[in-house]
Image (cartoon, rainbow, N blue to C red; front, top):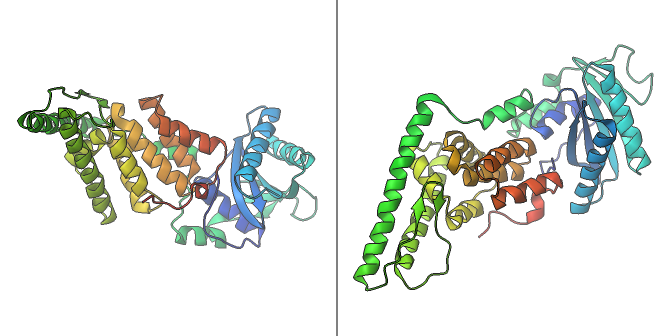
Length: 358
């Protein structure tokens, strides 16, 4: 992930170790983490599983560092942390450090974090033979990150759990609410058609079905204009109402949530929500809640908005989990593919310029 997070001064190895989980969004295990530094600031944090072939691991991490350097100032040095009690964790971390050094990166620190201790892998005498004791909860970095509202989930599986759909009665209730929302949308479009007929315009009705809202044209002067205008006005209102509720600490009920998810299938309504969504925690809560509650066929827009908000907030792991749900709902969804590419290329969130868009 890339980071545009607040600036902290990390003066101790324990602070560095304490801050890594908050950079990633979860506590890593059986991993090697590389932090890319530019101008004395951590610009990117990338992670790989220990079980991958080493050549593949080195290639992937080096590619992400290079991509981050192209997107912002060049990465001039790196810090590495291996995670795991297995001796392979130390071996892989050393191998990655040596490979990055050979590629011209200045390797400033190579550590191994195992249980409640850490070891320096660059020398034999700067940490005790059994490792230096380490308690993440007592580090200044962890305290500051918590104060700033950053969260580190227990592990990566816990991040995936955040976006899993609700089940049982809650899922049944949402399916019924979506049925009502689609009936409401059909009535809204029919009213638009009736309005067009009163005005003497041709009778060509836009199609509506679950998983698809036709819209986004330039207008034809027919009854599509009246129905289309109603759709966009309803979507704009639903988006703004939802954001007001979320900002005040509220939660959409099933009918409000279903209505919004149906309307967001129209790209103009989705884009209005996109333009108003940035890094506010209450926005993240809104899109996360709707991603969990939404009917699977309707999830691509909502999950993509969650991914956008998470990426802008520096939480690349949650963004990735949201994108997997979006693409499961619609493998061709363009916004999800754009954000996936941004994550894969380690593009920093700030590179898109000022946001929210106006």
